[in-house]
Length: 497
Image (cartoon, rainbow, N blue to C red; front, top):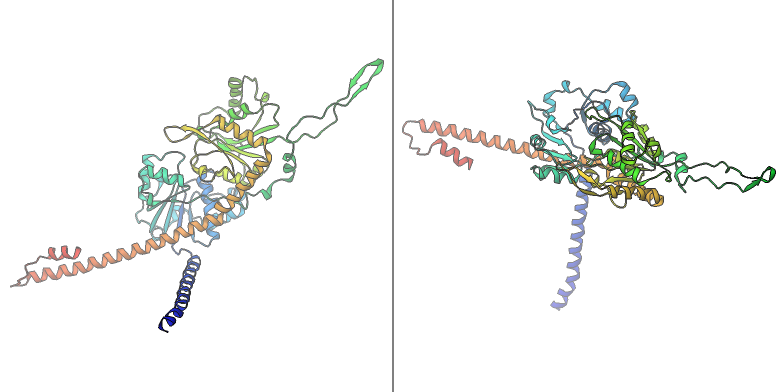
């Protein structure tokens, strides 16, 4: 009977155990939901970008990316950067970007040092341009990147920060190789405005031009027609609508790192007059580059490397050097069929991810920044053949030519990869996604600051207690007839231990 009762209790015990496990699971889920709904970071955030108002990478990354996204997420953000005039805000930025700038911007010289000292500060850009504070902020974040290896000077300048945000996991490795503590490095990607750079903006007229047969071969001539005195003439072919050329677009500042030499050589080597194709270069020569005018360079390359008297004898290259707005940039992507950039090194590659957000197939070197988001499913990665001493890559000319030909020849597969590229941009780098990563990191920083403050208070309290004991010991030792054989320093040493 006793055995029977014990056997009957076994299922009951199992049920109780299962119920307890279920209760524990519910508690864990409840805690997780609570953490997801936890309030936004309460400490002020100060974001400094010491650049002027232009389309430099740092300016666009912060002013057009992080600042609007974080304000939309409900954070209190102060922006310290160059003062933009009304014309720039109205004509160069999107309305929500200009509104975010106006809401967050403060003139740096007017910023109260006492407020900065109670803030979390992000120093964005050249690490050696970080401020020297009279009152140090609660937490200093350096936002930095590199196209190749990190210099010793930059690594030393980053030593003044509490932690370093880099755009990719590749930069975590690069910066740690330069001697920086890996525990201080965090991969924080850039933002892609996937709402603005969207294939929904694609011109239907361009879409109809590029879908289908890309050939531009006229139809055959009509049958021979008898003429006077027994002659025969061939009638001209009927008029036909030739499809627009397949357009590669590339956007970069004209310098060695962006590899315009390699791009032109690949384009003119791979394609001929029989290919209905063209290359659009949106570029400019920066002031520090000593380079001949681009049109002169095209003529020189055509003559020296391809033995042509004029670039007109080769597949067409269009050059745009005029400044354009972000809306015009989007239209430029929309009027193109593929993006190409055989870069030798990128910190991130903003035009690349913008093109991917527009669902364009991209032909890009698989190096540094782009390696973070390029895959065989969403792009046409160009392989490298080695590196230069400073860490820049040597893209393969053969790989570049093959990938450009593949995009041109197989439009269906190229469009499929372009669609996948947009899906990846939405999932990984949309403003909402990246803002959530920033908010999550700032919450952890706040907890670190709280622990740091409590620790400082604890040390101050212990110091005060030690000082009190020291004073009492000194007074006791000075009393006549004191038998104390222990010095005040001995008491202090014991307390310290």
